Length: 259
Image (cartoon, rainbow, N blue to C red; front, side, top):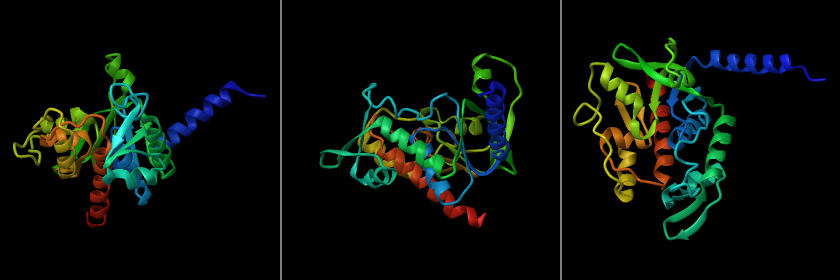
């Protein structure tokens, strides 16, 4: 016999048990695209408590669409070990170019990160940040559905030692900090420079340089990094995104014991 109320209680109790336990963590990642998920996986694998907030129903950012809705992606040689570690199958196209299933990559990222201990909450938007003593100390969250409906609903907060902006082209967290904090970002202008037109070769090269701290205790990775620091977009080559996620994870891992 199945009881509908038991089913409802099980879902509600387990969700809110996990949610309440996630209001304080070591790292909050905003955005569950390839860079954000890769960062979450490497952070959690090192034993850190990691929470990811994703505003959409479906995590993955631009991965599932591949290139122009052809659900294949390209990665370069430097990122091949990362995909092999995740268990993603690769087909060599020619020297330095590998093709992979966009959907397989997303599936492997989700499974490996969740099994490593990542707490991923979809349908939750980050609409503001916590700044204590001139450092980013967490985020302000709300149901995405409330925002879409235009409902005036006060948000809640989640606190962490570090926050990672993995929101893609819009660099939403860095934009909020730039607009509301009164402080300067660690860019040449003190503000978001904005991404440049597509140029995969240059975009992939500068992405890792741009993956870094942009404001005290706020890091950027993936396309958010190039948007903030003025790098080109790269299109459907995703190796740099994964390497960027790995780099930001390592930066935070190396810093946490010292702070």
